[in-house]
Length: 411
Image (tube, rainbow, N blue to C red; front, side):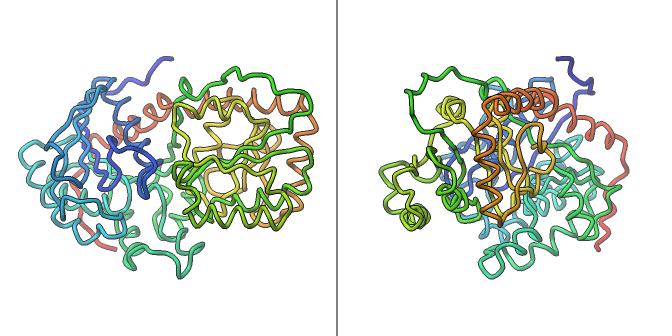
């Protein structure tokens, strides 16, 4: 595929809690780590000089590491060199930003790209006065989290105010979907200040895999993937299962299988399955490695993505890349990625009867499943590969190349 032409740039990415080197599966290691690693790697392979600044969380980490893609990862001393939950990091952002300011005064980047709201605090501190354009990607918004989690939201109380300030002070907000643009507008961040570039998926890794034919009379298979937390909606899939006969539900995510017995969400899901009489048709797989996911997805008849809210949602893209149709809740990025009636179906977050009917109707139509799956793969290749994402981000960087210095104007 022809790649967008772009001048060679020195790109500084700030990702305070999500290192591109981190092993996935921890409490704060997931989609953002993948996004930063993939975007940085693709830009570096195009000839850009890319440095990712992330917080040192281990005394044994070297000051700097170079990845196989040629990305430099710098471990910034900010707070204790030990693992901390991301909700505990705000107090350490001033020292993170001061370190960036000292570094960038000596070697000025051409553009700074902050990932997550706290990274925006550090990036704006480090870039102020240097004439360096700053791009902010939130990855998740505090307004959405607070709306859905209420009193259970563990984010710092200043989060929404800081997100609003970041959005007004940076040169461009890079949103991942149209729903996020609307959320930003409600926060007071003008749409003229926002560009939309979606998240991506590795369509070479996530690709259809030939799986062994299932024996005659084997149950049809539903698959749901994600962290074992209530908002992911695995309970909704279980509650719909009694109305979908001859079908099993596999749930991939959470700790390794041997530790599932001690996981509170796994226990809750097992209890719900028993209460609905489908315990024998629900299988909790625990954490599944990235290498095994394409085969697991390819072996499903239908992939379910049923969160109550989702800033973007990578599972539908992974399923579509593997040529599997998707049933997803009509929230967040799902509204952009899943085309209702083309690559799958969008459903409400609270109607179990509707969900069961949609699942049953799709499973009863193998031709429709095949057509939706093929359309999903085509859509991923046309819009959601990491090359496409890198094209879009590089265009934003190019637009900001001649922008004047930060104004520092507060809201």
